Image (cartoon, rainbow, N blue to C red; front, side, top):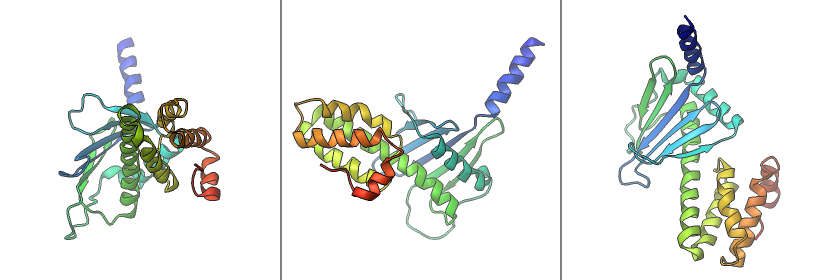
Length: 216
């Protein structure tokens, strides 16, 4: 009896924590494959291969996760087709999947005319772009000190275009550059400025509007 109650509680907990799965397969592009698993609390598992043994884990803000899950709800948790059926160029096979205690609901498409589907895809594209910028910054910080400034400029440009998520993931790298005299002064100053902005996310949008960019 006790075991049954425990099983029931675990089942309820699982049912209360659905996951949205997104993947994009686009051969000959970079990356050729991306998958993202998003939990309701904002936890993300990011992969660039189906069998990726070292996935990246990050976290977005609860309000951002709420917005993404609200879009999935508008799409009936992917119970209805999203493919437009129009003859358009191949832009990669996208997959949306709703994973909960019920059988998963899934839709695959190349191009959709559904505005909510496009908004949802854009959210996952932002997550992917953010990770690509993280990987580029990480590589330059470790192996190409002269390239760090370029990586920081790209990061700043994405921030200005509101394409970044999970800002806290960049802070260890930004602090490393800002505090290390082996990097160029312009890179150190820009890294420090970006870190200051990322640590004050509530003030960041207003600062972006007023200044247009982080000052060098």
